[in-house]
Length: 466
Image (cartoon, rainbow, N blue to C red; front, side, top):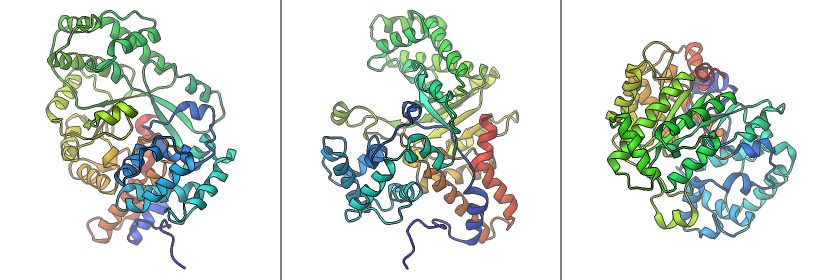
């Protein structure tokens, strides 16, 4: 009988890797400390009815692959019905070999639906019907999908203007998975963005502050931090091209902000000054509240102006950029550390050329006060694949302590994305198992197994105090 593609020892190439995974990694709970799941769907315990709604809608990874194959937008984000869109994805899947989508697709079918046949045009109809039958059942509601994944904690990402209504509703239920949030104030920082003043007006309403000065802006953000904190938030997240660090005086920042509020032009230099000042203010406030701050650096977004105008942001038109990262990042962290106001920090890079930059940067600010205080975040976005994960693990191992690493996250909008934790765990165990087999690591399965368990679960549990 032909072995299923996704089998017990998938990606595990020797007995050491197998024992590390099955004994020390596989059954660890999942702490998914950064994702973009919609809390509304968790609060309402949404039932999706078919696999397109939960698996393809909103997934720009899949959309990019389908477009590359020449599939018309009608069958991606357009007017085609759900089964037609699924069939278009099924047609694409065999052509995604060596892209992580191929592995993720079959892991997700296996783990959530016990489907071990390959998805293609021939199997599409059967798989669509089988998954639709299961998904229409309450056993496959949002919350039950999270329970099936082994999640213990999930942390969504919300703007400061969010009232966290749905998080409050979830907290009133008996749902066993802890659902928290992360504060994402980038729209208040990026002063050159279209619609900035309209956003500041909305932020002012959320904070019940008329924001006319820079001090007002700081007060409004602080007030929203206080509100998020009262709702259990203990993390923030920033998705920035790079860290700005351009010195200025308080008077200069007040002048720049006043110009913007008067709809006058702000120069690039002034924008850098403003962004530096507000980010330092926020980071010092995060330290005061003992939050963990996360920085996702290096994306080049919305490259295709025509399609972004048609479909909006986050629809598959982003790529890796080559912004310089090291100098300003160091200056920013140093400015906080000099005041002893550097909180726990996680740095993610999108450009793989920055792996060693980040791996060495974190060592500058790990001061012995907290285990792994400054972290090199897991492979993110385009680096969230086997090669990217291995390179991140190797850079961290060679230049820091992989034993202190807080492990994987999904960074996803999909309730079916949690097998990415399994994918990471298998890759980690195979990497270590291979070095044990070659004699580069000792055959001390208990100690190395402990390191695996720590990376998969216990380090994050300790780091976030969940």
